[in-house]
Amino acid sequence: MTSTDVQPMSASGPDAEPFETIDAYTGETLAELPYLATEQLDALLERADDAYRSWRATPVEQRARVVSAAADLMRERKDDLARLITREMGKRISESEFEVDLAASILQYYGENGPRILQPTALPVDEGEAQIVNAPLGVLLGIEPWNFPLYQVVRFAAPNLVLGNTILLKHAKICALTAIELQKIFTDAGAPDGVYTNVFLRISDVEHVLAHPAVQGVSLTGSDAAGASVAEIAGRHVKKCVLELGGSDPFIVLDADDLDDTIDAATTGRMANTGQSCVAAKRFIVPDDLFDRFVAGLAERFGALRPGDPSDPETTLGPLSSTKAADDLLEQVQDAREKGATVVTGGGRPDVPAPGRRDAFVDATVLTDVTPEMRAYSEELFGPVAVVYRVDDERQAIELANTSKFGLGATVYSSDPDRARAVAEQIDSGMVWINSPTSSQADLPFGGVKQSGFGRELSELGMFGFANRKLIRSLPRKTASAGVAG
Image (cartoon, rainbow, N blue to C red; front, side, top):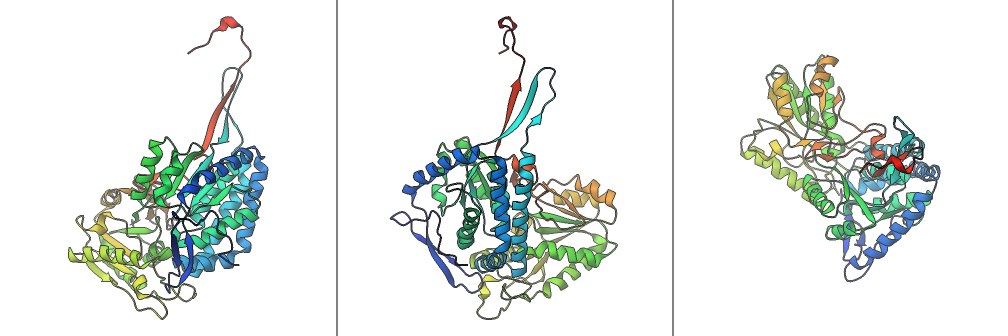
């Protein structure tokens, strides 16, 4: 598979300076690509709007078949896609392969279930009939990050394509080649021209897009700062938005019949994608009687991770997405260290084999004694750094879990399912997983509260984020004397 033979909606011109996408491990330049020129935006938007007029009139079963075909193509191209993800953003190859499978399962879910989910819903009325029908809105803008370059796109695109909306997708420049391949999948699956368009759009042009009358909404996955900025623009132009933002998920240990199993799960929950996940467990809240054993076990597992080439199946600690990401994370660790936190293990950069870039790596790090004046207490730690807190009881654990400004996911571990459920119901988050690290699957809703955003993706709920849930009311014809309330 070649990655540069199709460059959807990239352009040349005075307004379209190029950017580079690089190999996260070696720093090698993979491609140089141009941003979309601002003067081309209106033509692009009109094309997407024209496509919407015909796409919404296409039978829903046909739209669903396109999305199902995209799932099949994604599975056929799995090896190439996984290698490309690994090169562009540094994800370990086994995790890249898992991401391809997950993204394909989401496409398949909406391809198979979308037409059923979109069936009209009858409402009970005393006379005549009333229905809620689900209609598309129009052109939507998706703004997606680099850390899950397939999964995060398809969880937005798949339901909306089945619904009848058309998509403009602004992906992160880190994974530009993956973005190109994803458009090729939709095109090869039969999506007409303009139905799904990858755009190398600059942030400065987002408002131009959202101001266009054809554009009816925006979905963003990213930082809380980016979400606030886009929500402000969307609000100014009265456009609907769905936001999935940062997270600082608590992992609450209530008790442990098998503490080793709990520590294994904590390691998995923190280290997935080298910790670069919004729903990674980041704050471990552990009762006093288990604290020392938990910290020692977590530090042992972190210390055993092997840094190296993410394309090597033997590697267990990959690079971060960029040297800047690594530098930023180490600044947060250093701030905690200087203010009195204990670095149990890690805290610097590991040695990596050539031709890897040591400055793109961060040690798997465990911090304790973190206090509110430290950045690590309130900020998201986007990488392989865990903070472990000691608590006296369940009430204190819940209180600490809810101090965060974020509320995306959470995990509760206990041998008592009723106790775990009671605690889960008191956690301020959009999702709580009991006795399992937070995860994602096509038929379960995904989203958060507080500074982690609003709206839900995936499951049946994800079909309605950008739907016009329109009432159609039918009554027997009345005589003129019946009157009209108003």
